[in-house]
Amino acid sequence: MPTEAKAQKIEELAEKLNRASIAILMQTQGLSVKDMNDLRKKLRDVNVELSVAKNTLLRIAAERNNMTEVDKNIFNGQTTVAFGYDDEVAAAKAVVDFVSGSKIAVLKSGILSGRSLSAEQIEGIGKLKGGKNQTKAEVVGTIQGPLSNFYGLISAPLRDLAYVFQARADQLQKGEAAQ
Image 1 (tube, helix red, strand yellow):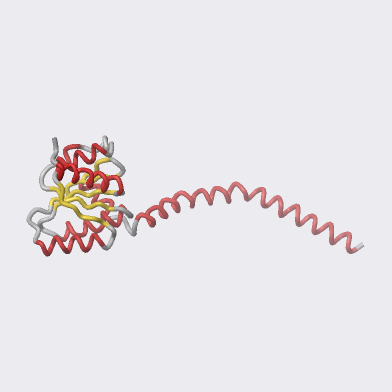
Image 2 (cartoon, helix red, strand yellow):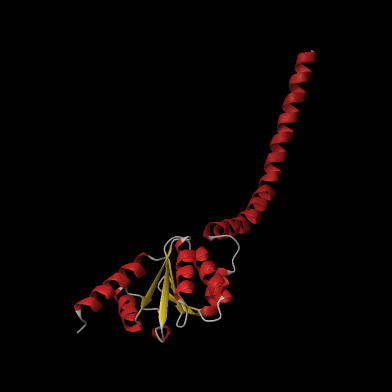
């Protein structure tokens, strides 16, 4: 039976996991207070909240949010969680930038849409150009380009036929006007 303080922490973590679009788990054991404050400031700039959590409490919070596809093995060792609320790409980019520049912090894993992500997947998200909206725009552009070309190809014969009819109608009108 958890104590009142642990139950309250579980509720807090469950609420944060529910609100967060991405949760990135890392190990920050050994970071100085100055480095930890720098990390918090850098993450706060992109609307990411940093929290140190016990693995058991974090696992229970994930279970309460029905995150059944989350691998339970990611909850081991000392864990610091970065909760990204707006842009998954910006959150991953900020965390990956910090971890790559730090000799102490280690990227462990993450949770995105109720699924576990490996450290390599988090790094991949962090390497995407721009943010979430730019990535969406690139996907739409990739799909829209060929569709636009296909529409032009399909509509060209009908458009050309309409031009022929219009040219013939203009020709007949000029012939009547001359008589």
